[in-house]
Image (cartoon, rainbow, N blue to C red):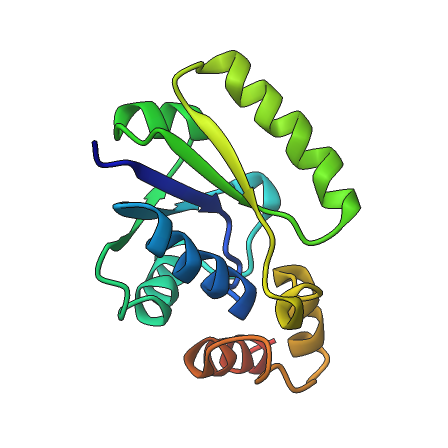
Length: 161
């Protein structure tokens, strides 16, 4: 039986750590949906369309991976799209606390969807979208943390400010 999974997140911006997890998940599942959350309460730097476009470009070589945007509860999206697995990345122990609570809440809201935790490759374990945005905003070199087009997009974004 084919198993489809989703990797939800804001992806503001998508990083090499995200790419690593999606690439590895694509080998484990028949289909992976990178579900880009609108997350207006987080006031993302990039628009939903920009974040989805960058994810499509970065992940274009993965044939069983698709990109979609969504609003609302992640488990509602999973249910509506017949996705049985939610993939979540864990970098640090502090990530685990939050992700454990989130997984428990999701299981309470939708018993038919399981959460799987994955850790990034060691060289990506410290990368976060927040840190990438901060470094980019201050003119730092983010080339080692994101796809070249993502770096270019962030440079252009901060040049306007």
